[in-house]
Structures are given as C-alpha cells and as structure tokens.
Length: 349
Image 1 (cartoon, rainbow, N blue to C red):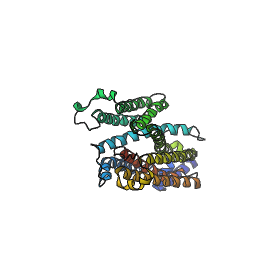
Image 2: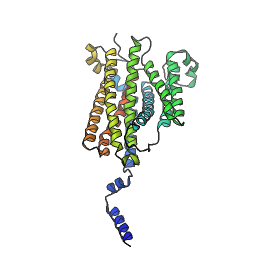
Image 3: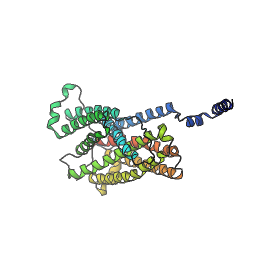
Image 4: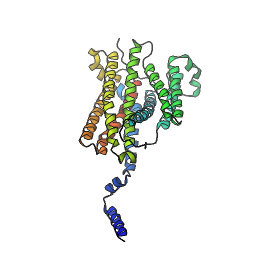
C-alpha cells in the first residue's frame, strides 16, 4: 500500500514537472525537429557559398573565372566534407581510448554515407578532368581513357577509388582500415593543388598536406565529439567532460599547425609586399580573407567553450553550446576552402 502511494506520488511529481526538465531527466533530447531545420538551413547556406561565390569574388577584379567554377566548387565542398566525417570518427575513436570511464556506447557511423557522397563528388570532378577541365555537356565529351595519361587524371581516379575503398572498409569489421584510403585522398588533393610546373611544388604539397590533415581532424573531430556526447551513456557519466577536454587540448595544436601552414602557403602565392592589396583586389585574396575571418570566429568559439568547460566540468552540455556554433562555422569554412580551389590563383614569382 505504501509502495503504491509512493509510486503514485512520484508519477504525479513527474506529471507536474516542466517539460524541458522532464526531457532532461528521461534522457530524451528535445527540439529534434528544430535541430533538423537548423541543419538543413546550414547545408543550404554551405551549398550557396561555392555555387555563387566565384561570381561574387571575381566581381570587379578583372579576372576571368574558369567555366563551371560554381559547380566545381560545390563538388569540392562535398568532397572535403566527405573527407572530414570519417577522419573525425577515427580520430575520436582514438581519443575515447584515453578518456577515463568512457562508456562503450558510440553513435552510429556516418562514414559509409560520407564515402558515398565523396565518391559521387569525385566522379563529377573526374568527368571535368576527362573533358580538359571543362564541364561536359554529354558523356561523349569525356575521354575516360585519357585520365590514365595525365597527372590530374590519375589523381582524380585515385580519389574515386579511395572513396570507394573507404566506404567498403567503413562497413567492414575493421573500419579503422579506412585510414589508408583517406590518407591517399589527402595526398592526392595536396598533389593536385601544386602541379609540377609550379615553383618548389614539393614545399607547397607538404604545406597543403599538413594543412588539410589538421583541418579534417579539427572539423571532423569536433562533429564526432558532439555526436558522441549526445548519446545517452555519455550524457549520464562524467566521461563527456574528459573527452571534450582531450579534444580541446589536441585542437590547440591543430589550430597552430593550420595557422602556420596557411600563412606559409599564402606567402608562397602572395609576396609580403603585395598581400594587403591582393586580399581585396583579387578573387582568391577575397575568399582567403573571408576564410581567415571565419577561422578567427571559430577560434573565439573554441576558447569560449574551453572556458565554460573549466568553470563547470560537470556541465558538459553547457560547453557544447558554443561548440555547436563552432562546428557550424567550420562547415562554412569548408565551403569557403572549396571555393578557393575553384578561383584563379594569383601566383607571383
């Protein structure tokens, strides 16, 4: 009888409890529909940047853009995002091993879906290379066999095959093996960005290799950390703060490497005495300036999240608020980075 009375009282208390608090107690995340709408809006904005970015960046510069620059930039944005997702999953899986008290639960992997998107995007980019870096009007315009005869064609085929292999390995019993094809994609992108006719292409390739690797770890890692902390098991334990702290410490090193390699790559293409002029007078410089400002915003959000985590180590969700904004801005950074690859590079020898 007493047990029945206490149970009824507890039920009544739960009924009188505010909706948001009841959701937190039950572990069910609220606002799922709102978050989905926000994600869709961010994806749409991220798609608009590479599509319309070339026209805006080239306006008034006197430079001529490549045919289909908007479409090419969009494909590269998808390819870069598809690279960040599985890299982040592997990175966070490694961090989890060092988090004390880490539960065994993990979010469902997005690697296969990301690899599929990257495979389609890389196929589109390979078709552009097969038509002499022009947008094909029909399959008859493409010289698929010619891809094996050129450096750009071989690199494009390498990325297509690497995304396919990464997707298959993500579905296998050893998803960590996809690190090899993902590394091949990074190397291919670094080589593609610096052709052999460029002055000191090896140096430029090395800078891009480090820059792209660190950027994929940073953006993809933060996304995966937030997804991990959203699971029920991680929310119910104190391991979430440890995982977020581990990521934050590594992110500082990644940001330093990204900044150093970014400055080095910029000075190779824009001599110090012309940087300020080119940041406003060339399309590449304008896009680069936008990227620098966005990275500064990301760094400020990361610092904010770190400070909130230090002040309240038991409230991981409080630190996740600026971290969610950080990952959204990082998505925009990826879109702007893809835009940079479709703009004429103002090389000054």
